Amino acid sequence: MRRLGMVVTIVLLGTLLLAVPVAWANGPQEPPKLSLQEAVERAWKASDAIRAAGAAVDKAYQQRKDAADVVSRMFIPAPGPEQDPYVDVAWTGLLKADASWRMAEKDLANKKESVALEVYQKYFAVLSAQAAVYKAEAALARDRWALQVARAVYWSGCGTRTQLAAAEAKLAGAEKGLAAAREALDKAWVAFNRLVSLQPQDRPVLVEEPAVTLLLVDSLETEAERAVESSVDIFKLERARDMAQWDLDYPWTLDTYGRAVYRTYNVQKHEVDIAGYNLTMAREALKERVRSTYHDIRALEEQEAALEAAVQTAQDGLRVVQAQYKVGLVGRDKVREAETNLAEVQANLYSLKCQHAALLATWRYLTGRPVAGI
Image 1 (cartoon, rainbow, N blue to C red):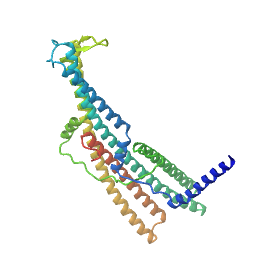
Image 2 (image 1 turned 180 degrees about the vertical axis):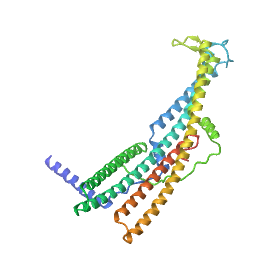
Image 3 (image 1 turned 120 degrees about the horizontal axis):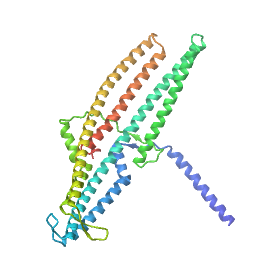
Image 4 (image 1 turned 90 degrees about the vertical axis):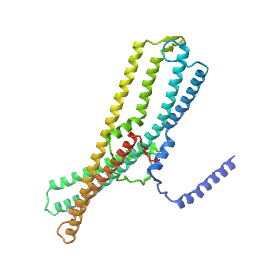
């Protein structure tokens, strides 16, 4: 036994020693690249919500088939209370099963689009958080240089302790700002990775840049109507109204013991009215959301134009300061200040473009267009 254990140990050690040079030769692997479309496809494959919606479609289809089999053996009644109660129940059962199946199919398609929208939002949230880190790093570099200058001035006897303390406090604030930006970035990564079935510590390279696409709309009210026509929630409320009407037209139902029970007209009529009011309110709320989203996008586009002008101004200012520095008219601190100002404005513009891209995806989702374009 002792000799056998020694042999096993030697074999294991040899295997490990052979594996080490292979791992060393391969070296650290580069992080994978991930486009928006690839991220969406990964999220679709990983989504339990989509799988559950697919199972709901299969279930609803089977229930509709069972209800159709029952009706096929009966006479289809006309509306009203003068029919065989069990025929009424079978017919309304088929109507409701068919509506439920169609709602399940709509829900499955909507679930895929909603997952795609979430990917877009989280993808651009990561890019925006990266821009915030870049801006915080630029501010830290500026304040670190300013502190070095303040210390030199103080120790030369030309500055005060108050000025030095102010520079130290500003650097400490920049360090905390950078730490907070990095924490926000890590949080954005974790949310994105969970959605696309990656490990929390994974950091793929997001290769998609926020596209500069202006929203062109011929008629806002036409887009609002399009949103209503394509909305799954509106479709469900329409079917709920239909079901309430069917219960009114075919008033017989069964109690828990399988006995026929007649619905009271005065009560069921209110159910139809309530379903109609809910549908009207939902339509108006969706239209208002479409209008609000449109104006939000237009406001972002105006801000983008202003920031693009600010970037151009900051670039011109940096070139002027660099020229002045070369001839000795300003110190290095002025160059640092101009560089940081440009970095901050560029980061703000990039972050705004990310917001714009995510909001455009929301617009496509609301108005019944494919979010991912695939």
